[in-house]
Length: 189
Image 1 (cartoon, rainbow, N blue to C red):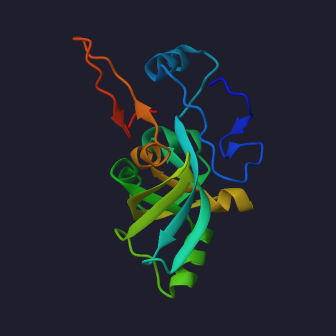
Image 2 (image 1 turned 90 degrees about the vertical axis):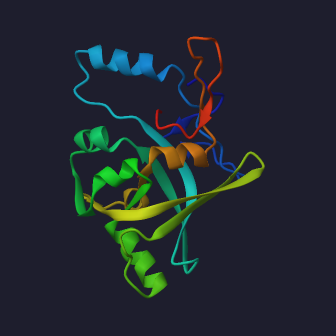
Image 3 (image 1 turned 90 degrees about the horizontal axis):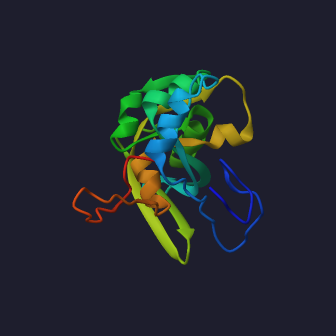
């Protein structure tokens, strides 16, 4: 989307001290998806909603800043084929799930003094636009990248609905009677 400042998947590229600045969302997602499907040079694509947040585990015994990608698990892993699912069911990423990179998971387990348990709650929180937002998901598994880099080792994959709600993205829909049925945190991009 058009913006006065440059953005990447990890957020605004111009440092802002006071708060996280949301990446402008793309409007007309169904039309964009249809267009991508018909482009002969596009082999695969996947939608991502990204945010910068604090991840909290173990009732507050571990808290760390992370980039969070809200993903569609059906397409994300077909585009990012080098991701290894070490533990868990990626289908949970459509049902409130959160996956951690193996190195990040081990760091969190060290902070907590115990192993993470599939199904335990994880909190994501952020400050943006003068307000705090906290959203809860469940630890659903561990992934690993074939190459090791600090930014990728910190990426958290989460249910897109959680991330949309965290960054306060809404989806506006006008039904066939002209009524606005806008919802927060829709599973669409």
